[in-house]
Image (cartoon, rainbow, N blue to C red; front, top):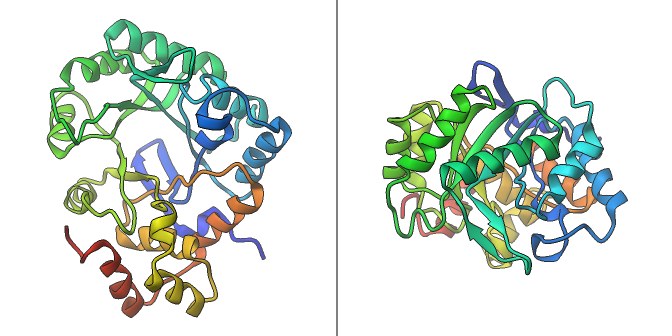
Length: 292
């Protein structure tokens, strides 16, 4: 029997924003380098429809994926949208003609990006918009100006809820002094645990934490400990790494990406996997201990 996303439980970010903790990230649906159209458009559409069939109701995207490509694919695959589907997008960057990533976060630029997302998704209002902060954790600085601009767009009714991406704990606190924050999207996985304290702080506030690159790449998945535990559970290293995240904290929401329906089903299978406590202790050691 194919596992469904609901097996991992749900999380409520706001009164009108309850999602399955196992979601889907659409970035890989664009062409190589997240630039241009997919090699096989029909396969990309099929992945999105399979995600909906599996009960995924949290899709992460951005209009700078492609650019415009993933949002248009989501629109073409899933409209009319299911009543419970929540689409989370990001602003704060655009792409140049060669595919480079350029930060753009002036009030005018953010307004244009919000309208681009609305148009390409075929929506009148965006469920959640995350402010993407370039190198926010490496070089933390004030995000008051761009976040205030997004708060204004929220007041105008173009956005329901606001979130943050690639930020420090201090930037989260600064944003919260301006408007409510429902989610934070940062780099985190079984081998990279720098945000442990931030996750716990957000959990205490009922704020979602959404790790990007949740599998950590090939290096993490080659861990001997991870492979042995996966074999003992009759699972795969990727599924165990995702299941570990779900058990790490109840506010963690997953958005693993893929351009293949078979890989999507493997990811969703992690929602139904329970890792015994003794195995969790061993897996915690991959990241250098329970705290870094």
